[in-house]
Image (tube, rainbow, N blue to C red; front, side, top):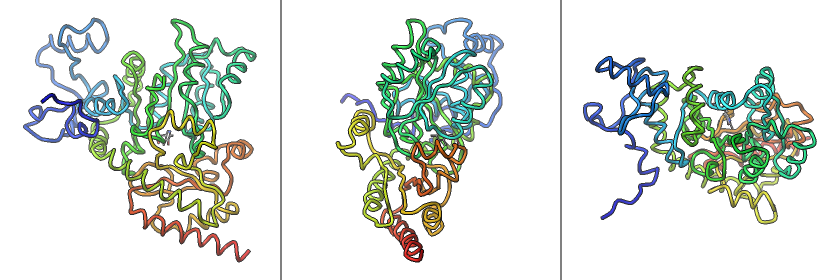
Length: 424
Ligand SMILES: *Cc1c(COP(=O)(O)O)cnc(C)c1O
């Protein structure tokens, strides 16, 4: 019988690793080594020639292991496995999500170039764009999800920055509002502003959807970025990042990573490989729980509004259509507005018993936080309100706990808010 193409979840335990490399060990060991021994001087020379791109590889010749800043088995095997989920040719793993994002931007932006980005973006990304890139003469332009590509194009032409557009960075769904940006429409916009020989690169921070629920490369993105700290790591015990794309798109990023030296270490690589074995079961359970939690929350009198992709209906118009075209599932991130303001939001957060009060997301345990005073405190208040980050907004990342326990916890915490409201 012919072997079918195995699905990524079937390959996460073994792909890219051969037990005979390591005394028959079924699992890839941690290659805790800084450097690798060459069998001969000729072999060392050949490895360096390939690493520096001084010649094309001969028939069947693969890049050799040289030094762990350039390559290491734990990283290479992990990168090969990550490629399977997004259908990417090449992946680079970093020691944090921020190092993946900053390296991708530095690899593609020169002084005088324009970076167009969706706003809001992750706070660390926003700071890097507005405070760091601008110091190197890179010009920046923000747009809001919901702004039409025709309007952005018009703006680019009348304001005269269209010809200098080098990169578009998107975060969709946006954190913490879940607003969606149409990646395919942004691809058409980028192609209209680019020229043959000057491709405008599109990077998508796909952290919120993880490698399971949205595949930006299939919608025209050049690069997909992850904070692997979130779903990919998934256990709140490691910081890491990843960038994926075609071999051609990844080449300058891999080269820059070698010289910035911000690759992940072998121990991080090993932890992420272990996490990838359960990626799909974790994420699917989180998504099922989130759908039930969202439905419960919409019915509670202390809740004013819930935003969750799984609650979108055809009445939501464009947002619904983008969701249907772009996302495979609604994910496990939701936000709710409790009736009241900061006081009520804090009463809710302080009353939680099972759900932990912490930033971060995509982990096995459920996490809640208050964007206005925590992750988005750096956004000026006027801007915060414009993008919907009100004082009564709470963000929830749903974990793998029993859904009845989660709902019990949320309900008793919301009842604490109701009691507060009846007192005042
Ligand atoms: C956490 C996060 C990042 C930053 O990742 P680190 O691993 O913390 O460096 C970037 N983007 C999004 C959407 C995130 O949630």
